[in-house]
Length: 270
Image (tube, rainbow, N blue to C red):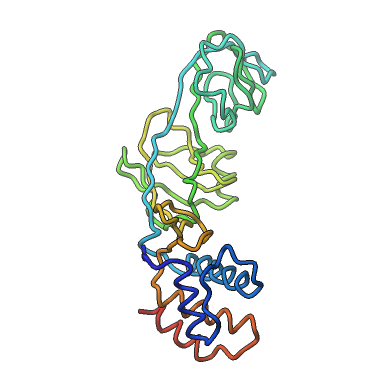
């Protein structure tokens, strides 16, 4: 993380272009400075997407969650009653798949609480005090998640690489076809969640690496996705940011950017 601030980067770029050097940036109501700070953020957004920067590459691990409870399953109904417990299921019921007697494949919860759970598909058989396994198959992504880094997704408990990310077609085949299980976990980022298949009914440690979108930070070193204050810093090289800001300024003004593009690309390739 560079110690050069957003204001200092802007001062350097504007000084090199022969423009009036500002003493403040984000508090200014000057139209040119509003444009300049907007372009500075645009530089950060675009650079973050250009490369898997080591400063933004982050490892994430989590443990799979499952519960085994009993309940009465009535054929043709989506309501399971007399649940022995619904602990852990009530806050995000739709994250859990259900496996047990009379439960159809690819059945998730839609609600839980008050001694009952509601299923996404009606049961096809009846059972009293049936043993039901509720496995969480959908997990929240890290708050700063931008994109996965290929071939970093592992089931660390089994020492197996997870398979994926699956395509939409393959995912539905796995969830709906006759052959839908296997020894290795498959995954797909979907609906802003990290989804796995099949239900494993065990606690496994899963992990992957991803590119963070938090390329900036406050003066107190709190990571964030944009410059919002004069004293904010970023992970990118100072010279790279200055050259990119100058190039964007020339571009938005309709000036020739050939020389600036050459300098920027040379710095980016270092």
